[in-house]
Length: 366
Image 1 (cartoon, rainbow, N blue to C red):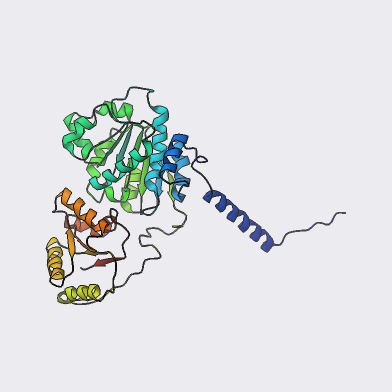
Image 2 (cartoon, one colour; image 1 turned 90 degrees about the vertical axis):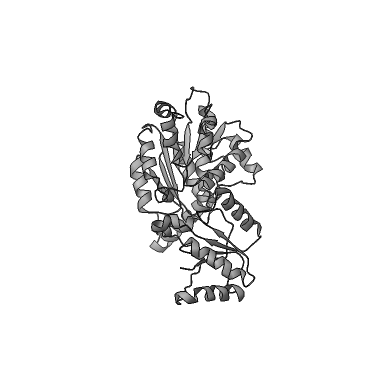
């Protein structure tokens, strides 16, 4: 009789751990080709110096290519934009010319015009060699010209869609016939920026067959509301490093400190922190009101500290110019205020950092 040996529980557990590690290594070595991306897109990525997908791209791209509705939650900078743009563009490659479209085949909705601009910078870089027609607008004045054609992809804030519908620039029947993909990018901000009515007006015209993608940096009640409003049995994807922890807005490598002081001493404490270089490199300072932002700027100038103020009352071009100067290092201290969103301040503030480079410090003055 042959000897029968049984593996102890410890040996089995170790074997299973080794298998899991091997699977993780294989996932990390996955290429864009293995995810099923078109060679033209892969070549465009390589020209941009991108050779391997990020974790959220590895998980999301196959589901999106299969036509599934997806909710993808991953922190800012994890590659969410390309996670939906790459499969979206691939679908356009294969579907272009199949039928005469009277409206864009894909809507990408984002909370702000700045984010519209960011998305539209990424798209041409990917399709330069692919000859896909891309269209977008930043001002309602140019809607009619921008939608003539029409373009394959429309990048917009939600408020522009109802305006175009009411002006007759977009037709509800055309949207119903042509729209194949709807993307809600930065979904955790769309409702807090006041777009709920605009989104409800649009969803009434979104065809049942339309694939819907919802991209978000955090989980929130607003995300759940959008998921219920627009998506159909979506796949919920979360980055591995986030795990089972919900709403982890602050990364583990970020340290937080607080200083308790009277209101009249706040400016003195800020001055001490900056003059003694207790906070270094780029610093973002939040204030509750626009008046306080300008008061702080004037106070710092008296002590030779150069700063700039960023708030909702400044013209769009001025805000962009200030951010460009901040990115270029012309000053290291940016005083930010958004009192138009006072009720949603805590939700709005973290996302207002997206257009800025890596910072060392964020100070909440009030």
